[in-house]
Image 1 (cartoon, rainbow, N blue to C red):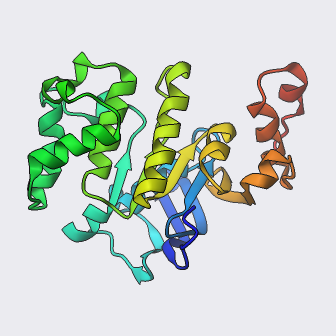
Image 2 (image 1 turned 90 degrees about the horizontal axis):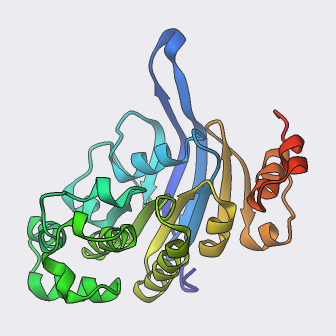
Length: 265
């Protein structure tokens, strides 16, 4: 976290999201409230279906079907976002292959957002973006299918950062990558976040990933935040909610006693 951070960048207040109607109604997010300070790396962790990615999509403006409030720099934001706000809030998705246009070169993928927002020196900024994510300039005219999964995710990160947003939303950014590559990408994100003073909200099902990246985290289950904790409390195993403790046990790896200890609280 940037030590100079003194004000909230993003706040959700009683954020609620439902899908379907009647008997098919699904309460995906239930009155979730949290605050992320400018410069902070904040984590949302929980099992699949807990609502964490749904929250990211609402903050990003990709899902407009929500109630409650989302605030950016203290101002309430509407469901339809102006272009200036879209530039300041960027997202990196789980699947780098699915999030990159398969028929566009890397040069086109990186230059397009700059063109949309009327930036200058597009070529120079594309080359700078490749340098920042540690990709050779030769990759500039390749297509996504000609690159490895780790390289594609680096391109996705470069695309998110090229407009110099204030916040980047990270939706399971390493879960689709080989284990040998995951740490490299996490370290790259951490380094770029510190050097460029980027605020992150990181979503993951892996407590270890969140603890590596974030100082604070919120643990979610069934659309609700059951506990908010500091990374230090996580490393010291000082979690209070039964589900949080179960998630911590599971994060240490599979064993019979850990599985047997899971209860439906």
